[in-house]
Image (tube, rainbow, N blue to C red; front, side, top):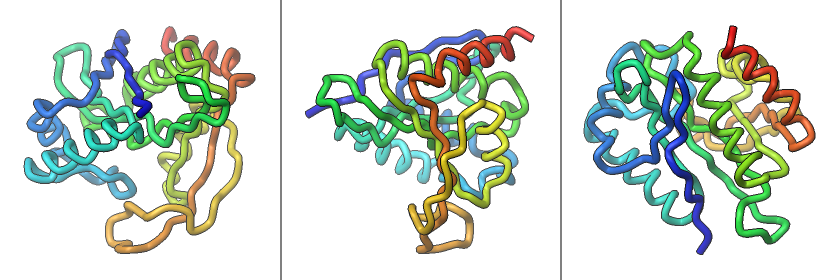
Length: 204
């Protein structure tokens, strides 16, 4: 069975550390503050939910469905959120994926509005395009999530359209409802210029 094996990805502001069982306490702490921005995202609430969340993601990792990470702030070493590669595909039959999605991303309130999100995306995209040599990286969100859509657009990922009733909604109160998904993607043709813009933004 294929697996997405990724080493720690280390930046100036944030490190992406492959998810492990001993991250449960740190994830619970990171998610325990102001949760107002978590309305469209699956973020565990409390230690028990954090333990279930980690078990679920580790199962996805074991079955080549995802490569999950905690986001660790460089200044104090605190876990401040999670992100992951997911939905890999191998249409060209290579060992490494040809397509992958970046998602499942959240940051604690103390880490938002900082360079960490931009740098985390740069670290993930660098690995996808420069190590795996993927053809395409998708970034998707609930079509109603204007904050997430603005962040993806600031990143520079081109908008590809909306898939209607596409995935199970994570929005609080929606229950068993399929959401409309706003689809963005970066291809290997887009990557050089987009990477240069991200590096420039981080150096400002």
